[in-house]
Length: 121
Length: 405
Image 1 (cartoon, helix red, strand yellow):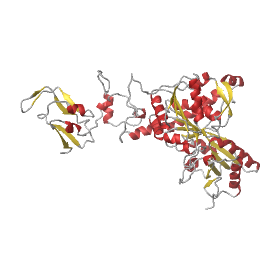
Image 2: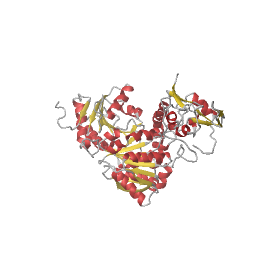
Image 3: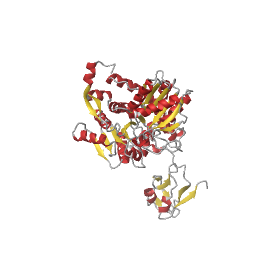
Image 4: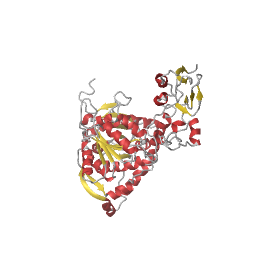
């Protein structure tokens, strides 16, 4: 990934990701010619279970963010006050467009704040 | 030769040397100024890459020579080098080619213009270092363009042409140039080598393709799920089918530039021929002689040699064979259990059938494991075809106890 540079994905690329491109339109050899284009490809469709974060149990330790292989844990500048009155400046949420449901975050969470929930439930 | 004045020819030819086909391939790689060679020795190809190692060691070409630990690594290294924009070359035979197998599809799927020489060799077991085309024929489905030469001069010329074909924007597919193991790889013939500047003018390094470049990053070799794979494979199919016109153009340009007369096929005494032998590779000389012997007996015999195997020049073949009554296809390879077990015979039969040509096709397997085939064997086949008609649609020439049940 290009560090420190903003990745711009053209509008055309986004549109064509929705309508599947034909063989003439695809880059030769299946090359990926726009670096970072996985952002526009929604790859969470084969998930069978989804992680759900209990924001009251989450202690913002960042472990899930570190261990997520995707990465599909988002660290957001979103203040949150727990039911017990603890104030946090950040919130962790799941990017379900890219989360594959592997469950590593739930397994590693030190406070069991992440539960794997079957899709469709 | 006919198009070029003698003086002009003399200025193009830098030397006329006695060379084996192995060394002819090496000289061609040298003269097109390859950048990267990765190879592993295997009989009967070894002298090819030894000669190139010598060129590199002597400073005759400025190339990176990677002495890899296997053919799997050889093709892998070339895939990487070619992806990064290098002009690449390797050579192999038989088990070495089989060991490269998964990479062959990767090279074509990634559209990399790699050029490989193959000194053909039988497939083990039993272990056999001698020449036949079982290894080469196993490549038919891999998406490589395939040329089979029948002389050392043709090997030299074909490797030069291979770079132009492979690197053409409209093609971008790897090319294999095959020749008979031992019968060509280790026999010496006179070869005219051209001055480097003419070869390099004919084969300018064409980098008009996407390459791995850190200033403009791209990904090659990413996974394609069922939504994408078929389209990307179809690109290869389309490029292969379209390449035949490009290959034709490049052949014409080569013939004009160097005074040669290469085509996709080569015919011999075909005009009025009724019994036609079709073949490929180094046996061509014996086939022509067998045809001459048959002609002396009054048999209307002729012969056709297939030089381009992929893409298959069906149109040229059908045109050449449209008046034939019996087509005897001599294959030095076999597909055991196939409808027609000679690999070329199968394609010839299909091509004729699709064009509604009613010639009888006989698959004649010959010379597996380099069993010697003589011109008189070709003559005998033509004679028995003419006199009694060969009853079987498949015959195996020269197998002891063949036909005894």
